[in-house]
Amino acid sequence: MGKPHIVVVGAGAFGSWSAWFLLQSGARVTLVDGWGPGNSRASSGGETRIFRGGYGADQPYTRMARRALTLWQEHEERWSRKFLYRIGVLWMVGGEDSFERGSLRELKAEGLEHEELSLHELEKRWPQINFDGVAWGLYEINAGYLTARASCQAVVEAFVAEGGEFQQSAISGEGIDSQMLDGLVLADGTKLVADQYVFACGPWLPKLFPETVGKKIRVTRQDVVFFGTPADSNAFDETKLPVWADHGERFFYGIPGNQYRGFKVADDTRGPEFDPTAGDRIASAESISKMRDYLAYRFPGMKDAPVLETRVCQYENTPDNNFILDRHPSRENVWIVGGGSGHGFKHGPAVGEMAAKAV
Image 1 (tube, rainbow, N blue to C red):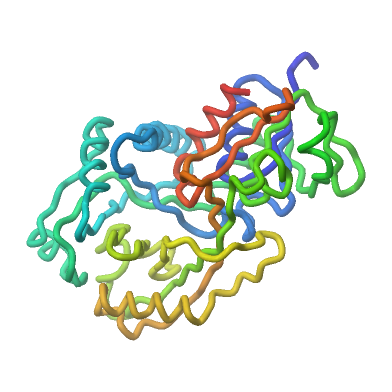
Image 2: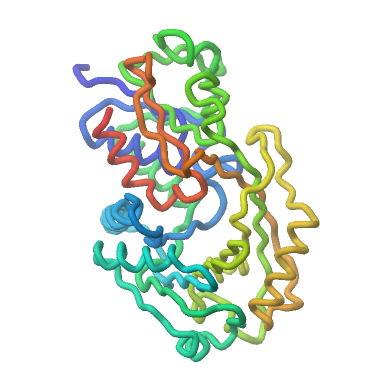
């Protein structure tokens, strides 16, 4: 009974790991999420996310990725689960390359294995890719992809198994940003009272904190398309291709496989504003056409590939794409963790560890 009670709202990558590390630190922790860990509305939903350390120069995220990599490995062993598939990440570099040059220095400083590949080496290693317009490549050897939905659920399962409490319920956000918080009202009318409250609600943070967060987070719609690979060839699955990022005029990226889900293609360009609760999750015909044109150009053997599945997710973008981890400016018992900005998932355990220490 002497343990501090901490409520964490949001069971995505930031919230679930924050709850886990708070529990490990000795607190009593209640984790709350309206639709459950890894749900389809969450920014941490869906099948896969990229794990990479390349972030350009002079930033904290390569170092954070190194710490996150250690934590992912430790918890894979602890829970006898596999989350990270190290098929490598290939950056295809065309034109201005300061981002990749800066990444080379940061990767080396953090001891993350990588190769700098010439155009000739790229063409020899991956002949199924059309490297037109690509000057050279940066290959992160131990990078790859993470299972997203499955790992969120695994963290929450472990959290509950070790004594944490999970409640699937909506909360009333009325007055949270403007009044002293002496409890959270749940959908059934009960009140959840704690010593500290951590809000890791991703795209819902601007709605819960209109004054404090408000327009500091812009939620954008992001379409993802999965294409079917040829039945008579494994040239386009994860046994033959790495995760790839095409840093050209537009920033396309993709994951070649994952439990036979298909060849994932996405455009990192920020989409229109999006409501994470009420927005329709149907990819537009324009997006599908754009992805198909790109696929035919960069991966000619996939020119006539059928669309297997589409997804609509969202980014919650801060003005500088940096994360938010801070105490509410006028509420001593309220913490805000978010602003993943489309690159947060891989950092989940590192952010959770940081948040727990801060709280």
